[in-house]
Every structure is written in C-alpha cells, then in structure tokens.
Image: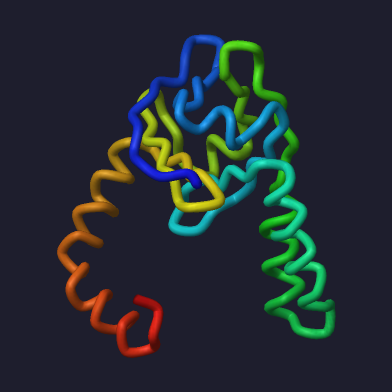
Length: 144
C-alpha cells in the first residue's frame, strides 16, 4: 500500500527520484497519466491493468465515458524506473500538472500522485479545513 507524503526535486536532467518506500511496490515499470485536481496519477503496471480494464468497460456509447477514457488513456505513458529509483516525466504531463522544481509525491493506496509542491500545499490546506464535513458525508454512505 502506498501511503505518506514526500517532497522531492526534479533535477536538471528532468528526472524525479521516487520515494524509497514506494519503489518496491511501484516496481520497475510504471504508468503515469493525467490525474484529477491537476496532479499526475502513478500506477504500478499491475494496478494500471485493473484501472484500464474498468475504463474499457465503460463503453463508447456515452460521451462522458469516451471523454474520460481519452483523458486517462490518451495521456498515459509507460515509464521505466532506473536502477536508483528515478523516472523521467514527459514534458506534456509536467505541463499538465504545472510541475516545477519541487514536487510532492503522495501515496494514495494503490497509486501515487505527483503534485507541484505549492499546488499540493494549497489543496491540502483546503481539504484539511473540510475534513470533518467530508468524514460526515462519507460516514453517511458507509465509506468510513
């Protein structure tokens, strides 16, 4: 399970070092794609297969399904993790997530997320202010 929050730097050669605690679970080949809330989603190869199968089952009859499939699958890239745990994030994904030098790498159960550090700080502050209300809503539907 991927959990925790780590701050890392994209180096001069545009490489990002993955958190040491994530490397074994993510494996040597990962998939990076557009995420929600202007971050990137990072999946281990086996988890990506599950996600892509669910997306494929949405079908093509609904406009929303087609659009979301294009967003997630069209933006997906297989990336190799080098021997010391670094990855190269494609420029179009860096631009999408507005990644600069400092990034936050967040563990979210079966995936990791990559955020621009300042964007993450703002988002986290907003969510922290709503945590009690969110817990109440999730509790009402039996999620927690």
